[in-house]
Length: 536
Ligand SMILES: [Zn+2]
Image (tube, rainbow, N blue to C red; front, side, top):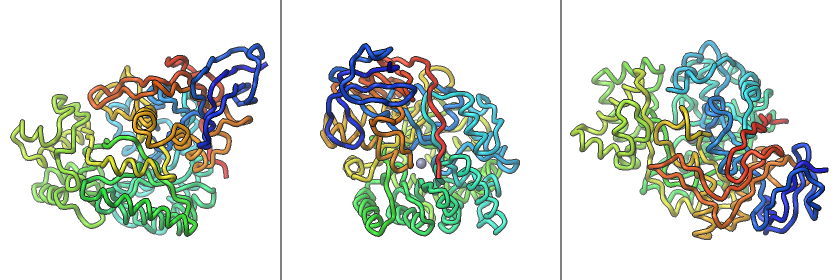
């Protein structure tokens, strides 16, 4: 007797091969048979006539580390068909926490800080915390170099001493032992970007011992994008780890042509034996904190120091100058794309700003946009609630090139949210609810850029292969039963910039480890996700 039978569906197995028709039987969380199966052999039957039966989607790049602790149901992601999320990215993981970085770690989460108990320290304790609370989605985490750096040397902008580097390597070792999948960096951000290439290479050598990977939000995504991709490849080459380039794109019209070169650089690196791939989201804008608009050096020393710098007239002018012009090794978003592409997403102090561009607000208020931005930042730092912004200025042709590349997989860069409670405040990026369905609606059904099967490969087996997850990402007997049943005619994102909380359509069933978690589009309440631990 099987637990569940998914009958009469079209099997899209995750390899990219064309669909075929078969039944799928599940027992004890695993796929036990694919073929012709009689329905009275199963406790529960799902009729998938003319629906696509696919492996559950793997979100190759996300930031749900704290959100799944706030709400373990992972609503906005599971409803898209995501059964595994890769977190701890861009240099920032929720562990390790030490006496040195405890205040930093627990004070920078805005309104979510009080929703979480913060009663873990090591990476292993953090994974156990998620496990203990339960999760609807399988959880994967990298360890962030920024987090490790603050755990040892706080927010100091300098090279680590030998002793500090040794301590950082020990923390990476501990995280890898606990099951981290590798090291992430967010070299554009502070404090991750306080690290130079050599420092990241040293940390990645520890990752190499465990067969993990290096996942990089690269140092610059505008004029520096090609050099930054090459730096990531160099880190992989020198330390002996595979490289994953996060949310690959170029910001700023002047730099769009560079995507041809970055994709070529990845191909060239692969020819030489460096395993490099990338991920991408199907939107032309990102979302980040307003604090990322100020130069890296301003973040040295942390929050109190930044407040002092913003209040000192001379230093404030220097910050504005660097935002206008950039500085060697750090490129300014404002310079690359302009204030009219920077749109306020969440601003608890001035809710009326939400949805407006910085240029528009500056005109309405009769204030210089740099002054306006620094004032908003200061209000956030002084505890009135941080401002986040959407940054437009990515190109459609670039997006299509990256999506089409055989090296790209899909990463939402999003969070698992819920359209109720504390996670429903502010204008989040619509990718939180719409990333995966959007890929299938826009780039598969409407534009035909990818076949359905190719899109499924990019959302399943490619990520599993990269992460070294051997028992998910394909529909095969013996694999864990992470399965999404999709209506290819109706799959669509509904979330928009103005209404980001709308669930998609066309995701009929989602099974996580053999448990039905979404049934006819509704969450069943199941918390069947597992914390996945990387094994050597
Ligand atoms: Zn990032």
